[in-house]
Amino acid sequence: MKNIVAAGNCPECGLEQVDCKYNHFQNEELTIDAWEHRCHNCGWRITTAYRSDDEDLDLAAVDPQICPHCSRHSTA
Image (cartoon, rainbow, N blue to C red; front, side, top):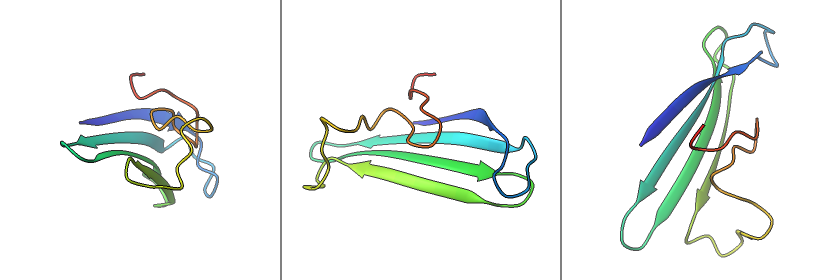
């Protein structure tokens, strides 16, 4: 499931061309929540993904359904 919304100005070129994209994958054993901010003008991007099989992931400290770049919820 992909979810894309406008996310504001690009930190590189300054234009309001950044999208926030959320992608959710789930099967019987694995869940992945992936976030990407990408500028349509200059190509700048930053990505973060959370995997349920990551032993270092502290779910008390981070919510995989909240974007770490703009704080929007995956359902927004």
